[in-house]
Image (cartoon, rainbow, N blue to C red; front, side, top):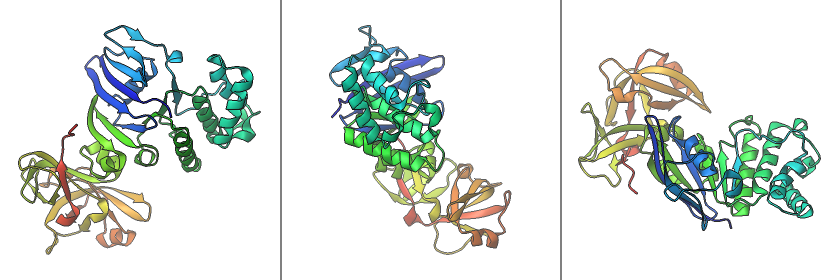
Length: 366
């Protein structure tokens, strides 16, 4: 099993500051999520040794590869870090076997040993038959499989996965995702995964860290973070609706004074909190409904989006309605869309039962 990771990183660039603490246990896959500009690429650059932090310390296993105060900065090619990026970036003039052999040979491994390791890894990523092909003779998915073998060949202490499935077509992605999970798990490989995909995080990662504006705002087991998001970004990629406010008895009070009924989970009255519920729990009406739902609010229909077997109605604030409704979603059947005579711009009513709404703290607690 490969070593773990411990990192304290501070990077200042103009008005932006990345200030994070990260840790990954040996053999653990840690996903880093966050909106564009959150600092994910900067963090990867520092871990890879391509950027020097202004402050902090990074250890891969027992070796310190970066210590800003002590002036330690191990160069990228010597710090035992592998990289699998969006693009395979294979050497175009080398065969798949030679591409995979290159890393171990550069680290002084004997040719025969390096080739044996390369063939074993090519077989592990289901690419043994590609050994004698050059990149131009491979599909994008095949190139990415070879690139994974190449990244693992030097036996890195840490593997960085930078949106490794983003450039693949929809047909190749599921197979590569499954293969990546199997190979990384079988190798006991410590890895940091940067992705915008909730599915990639769920399938590949043990834990998740969410960055916003250079800070860790959520952290925990992958399923827990995606099931109980605290930030609009995490809620969006998890496919959930989120309403911010302040916890109160039996629910939450939004900034405009609206009461959202729900069941509290570890919140105290007066604490910043969020109400979370799935779009499938939202009922949609053309006129204000009467009866059991405690949470009813007017919205303007902003967009109609296909979403598998259902249709997702995306909301915008209605005149006189709550501003926090912007971006909320409801999943309904195509027949319901026809019955509502729904089209962008019309006013509708979203309703959700209190039993479907979870209330939990908005702030991340370390």
